[in-house]
Picture 1 (cartoon, rainbow, N blue to C red):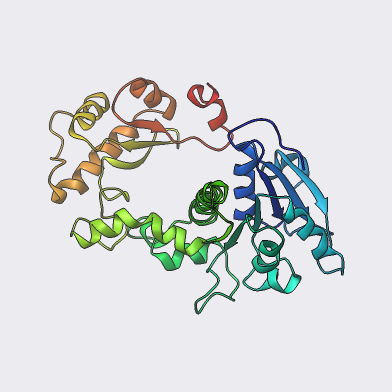
Picture 2: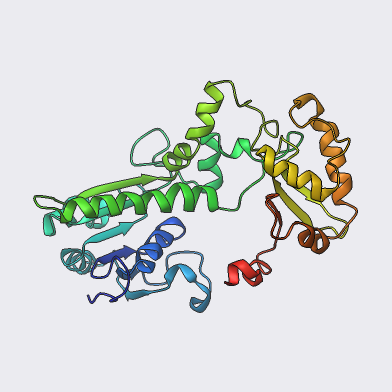
Length: 322
């Protein structure tokens, strides 16, 4: 396998046992950083697929098709692992072992290999062998229960929070740390076991601290950062668009209230009992102009206000384009 020649991971060789969701995304990040990633595809594909030209998680990768259920399949993967620095797999617990490409077999061939595992529930525990998807993993961590209005069901954040933040990013962090160790004098390879439920739970660390300190209510839409505060949330505009407001600090809020036109006579933001009235006043003002008009009002200010853009709109925003 040849390295890509670009990026901080240039020269690092990665074998990805193809799957769906967080595993491919993690391997994509390694490839983006310059690693030479060879994706081992199964005959017929790994599951739900989109046209290759649109599958961004496979960018910067090379591919080889291997039938791991055939007698020679495991041998081909072990040959790749022997020459690799990292292997990434996202099977259910025990599947890689049954296929003959588990950590024991791979590390026997390559003692310095970093063997990265991506699962939803982890390798052990009551739910380890149970099927699941992002929404179930984040539901059990308490993270899903924090998102959404107080008078409605939890809002589903696509599969970004669990699969990619709690899963892929934690796997990549672990792989990079293990790779650093493996390449140090006297270092050796090891297994990096990343579970989406673990990573997502870890993402709630600050909130748990606030909850223990009495600074967070265990109810949706009642806190400083979950839409409970009227100066941290979204508001509808006259044309049906929305503006996002994050005017937490007093000086940013002063700029926000001035530009919005409510600095005189608005309910006290420091009094939670007045938050309902303040939200009503802010909402009424935002409904008087279009999203584009409010975007212009708050442009280049420190009010911490931004238009809520769609996926198709976002790439054309001047800052993202730049």
